[in-house]
Length: 405
Image 1 (cartoon, one colour):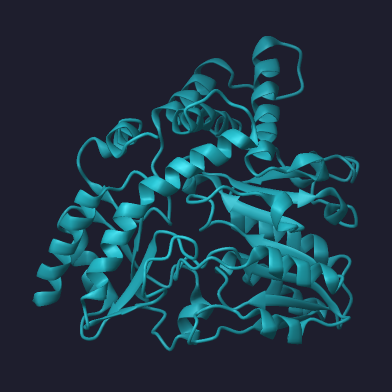
Image 2 (image 1 turned 90 degrees about the vertical axis):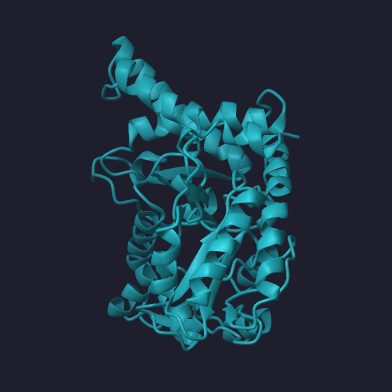
């Protein structure tokens, strides 16, 4: 099991001592990812489809990235991977494809805990006569209850969109139970794994989901969005790429203009880093699981330390679990102060050598449902496995200074 010091040595951005605590917005990159992208740009920067060496190498990189990501999420033979500039772009592609087959009166259920990336594209279908149904938040538990979903599902339900983890509360949703309910209703599940993917291994076979997406740049990789879809779920849809490309061409029909080649090289650069975390040569999804076991172990002490400090503060309102429960939450802690605005807290902390943010973090509907001002939102601390207890102690000392003013 690697220790924090050996892990941090892989990340050049951490060498200066700055504490990155906005990792849910974007993580740092290990040397292997940076080197892979640089090597591609120097030696294989070419268009695909030709027989000259650089073009052949470029195709190997793009195909290799898709294959590696399929192993990463445990796609198996049931589905495949589509890449785009971002997760939001991928959901827009998906929702636009559904706009061609959904009928007026069909229903799409959208969880109120969703990031807007998995909300706005579906709400836009209202212009086609589709009814978008809010799956509301329980203000006590801060999740969207299964019992409520059961009451919303009906014969007209076609799609259910929800997050695996809220990027505001850090709470883990019961994905398998949700997907089972959705499938029993004859609908399709679209799960946002963006806030989950940096912290736990993804296993789409275990979840039984139809579509699952996450952002590679929040999982120590390049700025790309990653979408898994079951072949059976893609089958009735037509991708947006050119008319002469067969609708059965996968993933090409879903990647208009092609994908970011150097980004694909960066994806392949994750492999040696995950081998280091797992302590073994790459052996498919098993290596991914063992790497994430190390990630989860590294995260626990800083996360527990942060929660312990918040437990002693009566002037702060946590937006999420009051207690540290690794089985139910990941390293995201959002909070409000009784007197100070979130923007004031974030700016004061950033001036002391930390990186954190405030706002609604694109969970606009959730912030509004909590009765908070979306403009100010919450202050958020989001950890990665390279954060340390020492950084948390420095942060809480700084927070005590700021909140005492």
